[in-house]
Image (cartoon, rainbow, N blue to C red):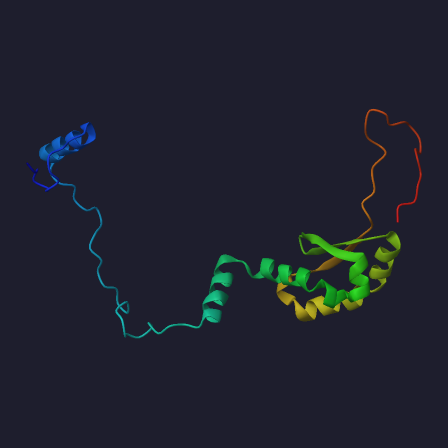
Length: 164
């Protein structure tokens, strides 16, 4: 025995419920509207030629606002060539904050040396990565532990040591 949809005799409870609902309410109708051809949407009409992938990616990065983050990522990847091999061993890009390129150095001496080279580095970045929107360079010294917090901190100068 088959129902009007040709599914056969319902054997399980869900199948019987489905068959009863189909009998009462009828077959479900498609909620999708039929597609109407758009002007210029038909094959072999004007504007339907394939575009190069580079052009599509350029348009997507501009539309989505990805140009600056992608340029900043490229700058981070090219840091060794910008700063030089020896300098890049002692300084690395830490991040970007409101147009400021943060560079973490191994020591305060390297931070001072890089601050003296600020003009050369910023010119190179402006020439090679203008979309990165780097307005300022900030050279940071090494991360040092803070002795001023915690349950056993004392008033006064505390331990003084040279880090870097």
